[in-house]
Image 1 (cartoon, rainbow, N blue to C red):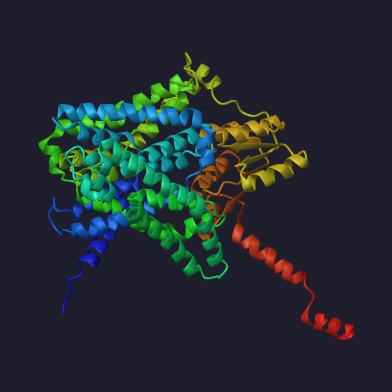
Image 2: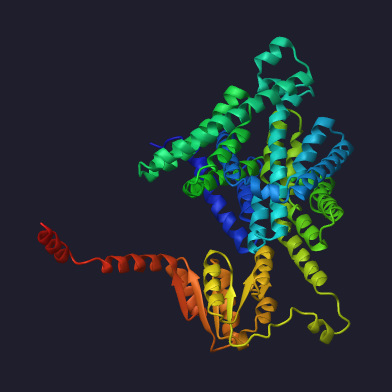
Amino acid sequence: MPHDTPLIATIVAGLGLAFVFGTIAQRFRIPPLVGYLLAGVAVGPFTPGFVADQALATELAELGIILLMFGVGLHFSLNDLLSVRKIAVPGAVAQIAVATLMGLGLAMLMGWTVGAGLVFGLALSVASTVVLLRALQERRLMDTERGKIAVGWLIVEDLAMVLALVLFPAVASFHGGNGAALVADPLATRFGLGLTGVLVLTLIKIALFIALMLVVGRRLIPWVLHYIAHTGSRELFRLTVLAIALCIAFGATKLFGVSLALGAFFAGMMLRESPLSQRAAQETLPLRDAFAVLFFVSVGMLFDPMSLVREPWPFVATLFVIVVGKSIAALVIVLLFRRPITTALMISASLAQIGEFSFILAELGVALDLLPKAGRDLILAGAIVSIMLNPLVFAVVDWLTARLEQPQAASPAAAASEAIPVTELTGHTILVGYGRVGSIVGDALHQRNAPFLAVEASDDTVAKLKQRGIEALMGNAARASVLRATNPAAARSLVIAIPEAFEAGQIVEQARAANAGIQIIARAHSDAEVDHLKGLGADIVIMGEREIARGMIEELDRQPAPDAQESRQHSAA
């Protein structure tokens, strides 16, 4: 007898199609997030075929929001933000203001209310952290000054959007929306507070929640995590982390009227205070990723593709604000802070898309009757297309950066002379990566006075190496121009200390082609990576887990045999 299982059907259809569309997107070097959104469109009510349960999908999306915001809080670093606060904080605030005004102007042209325009503009002003982090990781810019500014900028945007999520219901109740129903604050109703009173009351409740989290949660949450960790149960540890995230988010909503997003964000922030935070992040990552996928699928279900056909020009204008208007505003703001043009270009490319918070703001705006459904469709369409275009935007910026860093020459010969200068070292070691592994290798080579050249993506690390008198080159060694500057043809050996097997494979292949006799030593994390790198020409590939096991075996071999121990015990007796 068949059973009616809408929940199972919704999860299976959502995750199954998300896998298919996400894989296709990845194949074409498009962020998988686009595939997840298209999967939602495919199972939504506006396309033929199977239609998933939209109510269930929305509830699953709420779980996705909680876990997504919990992850943001878990990785939120106040120190990283403080290091670039002089540009990230005012720059992000100014960019949000400019983008919001552009969105408001477009909304007014379409005949919407001011409240709808503000929601619309805010949704267009915030970029996707997921998309940005992937772009920075691909270019190994996370540890550079440009990367830190971009991440700090996004953190400020995220915090501003979290505040907006909290204040929206209070504001909506005075702008023709149903925010009063969502706020459901008996004090505001009983005393008939006006807009200012409701906002003040909301901020007081937020302040109380934050104070409780900082005073109690900051001590209690890490203590609970440590206690459970000492039980030795991995399953219970994972359950504890999830319970903390969900219970704090739900409790914050019920007791303080704070949004689920803010509650989950602070749960992650407090959990970060524990030394076990990295383990907590790893243990919950699969579930967080799964529900985040369902969140994007549920968002895609709300999108009506025919809205683009019915009203194409509003969509074009929306996309222009996201990709062009917002990017130009960021470019000008960064240049006003007297930062290099290359930094300004990278920041502007990073912001030329919208993502997670835009969806959350759009959905809340529609729920509060502040934003028309047409506005949500424009936001979703703008997100999908801008995320698809973002790799192209970065490619253009990479090309412009290369041209700006290498001044135009009058002839090919002159252009060659302006290329990255090739080192004069011969018979040297090329050390790619100067992190935890590479720094140990580099220090050993330096102590032996062995000639070597370090290649590192972090400009801070390169500057410190040069101060120590060590020749260093900033860049990605997988790029032909950078590797060529290390003079691999005259090098004795190549040590690849970076953990990325794909980039390491490209370096191995190019180095082997330049010098058939060079000794290549690389690192790997799995048997498949070992086979991959050896197949491309690496002489020795060291897998960390194997070396740890060998070290343990050597320690066991150093212990005396059991018979010898027993004989010593008997003689002592």
